[in-house]
Length: 188
Image 1 (tube, one colour):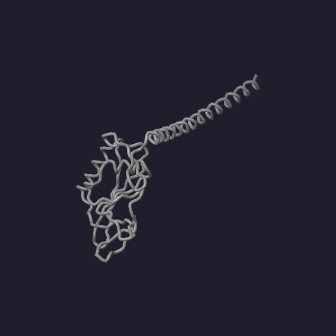
Image 2: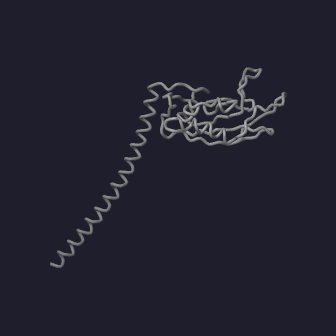
Image 3: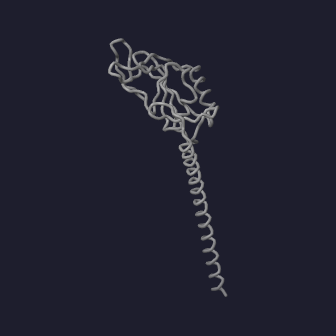
């Protein structure tokens, strides 16, 4: 994904975007926690940009200042360890971006197919209004019901396809039997 940027008078590059429901900024990889990953995957997915500092501009708007962070094996291992500690574990992807010779990392978190997800300590979160919020019991129940209804529909569809195949075979056998009986009657 490309990120629109502008160069400030101070020499730093600034994203022309801000934290939102699908994007979060972290200065260093240690600031990424399992709650961040759970919140994104329980929502619509999103990305965490490492090496980007959220700052408030003079006009009171917020933006991301690119301070830099290279994509290393250690960074990947750190994030993957946090993602695999979640229940169920979360798969993440990584992309390295460069702006003005400065690298920063995008951790891509996909929307979960086994919602709801939680941390190892049982913390359920969802990304709302540019922040991580606890999931209330009603929303948690709705997630479980949605997941289970999808599983039921998939199983029901598979069963009806199998049933249709069986009924087709039975109809073919009955037709064959009927033809055989007709032939026997003609021969009698």
